[in-house]
Image (cartoon, rainbow, N blue to C red):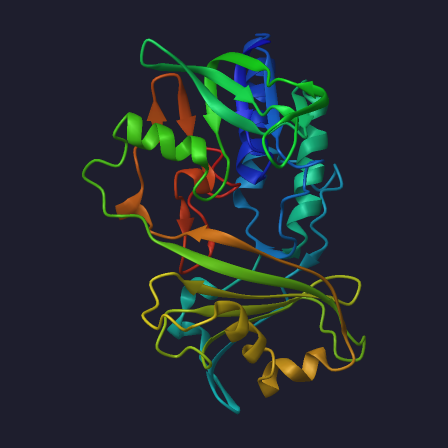
Length: 337
């Protein structure tokens, strides 16, 4: 199969990129073919739901998003920042951490936003193929010319099962890699084309997230809470508690992977954090309805590799555009620029 543009990854960065290319088709009266490959069973299947979304780049990408019923329904109404001691939460004045000011932002389900972006992309002519992971790069004459999708119908022992199908070669003039943090194809092009020469080593973290349905009496729609300190005061960890719509709360804990204690369990630290009085009071009588974890890339500008290579581009967390102190992406949307 051949396309002009192939986007690998159906997260915010990949979807925004596909939409932008499709919009340029319309503006320039061109007809370049665009496809997007997503390893999940559907768009949004691999997105950890719940975040605070800064809409400025969405304003640029789809200015009429409100008219198109984008799922941005809960504006942030109040910010609270705490430094935790074991049994005490000390309020931190907002001017101490101005980057955590979320006035004008929204508490959203990122999975729902991605599904909506997928609909916008398809209406613009982007072909989306969920359930097709890109497993290999296609390289000719030191130039990336596409990807190969994963083989299907292989047993755990590596043997071919009945009805197996080999991967498909999808060739493209431009291959855009938006796999997320430490995507294996992104790592390959960074190494092959020396994209990180002269850059600081990349830094990583792990983030845990849970979605809770909490007691309506305790729910404060639009409230955004950020904390640091206990239980990992000696680590640059951070946590959050976002009150979304429908009495849902999105909570999470992020720990950089350079912690010194080899016995530390980041998951257990997250569970301890939930027992702090400031947090526990909201969870009493609630129900956890989903949970997950993901890697974060957080080296910042000094670790950002060159984002273009022969035949393609790196975007999103595949490149490392996360602004860690704000936990959002450079040029956001993710990275339509």
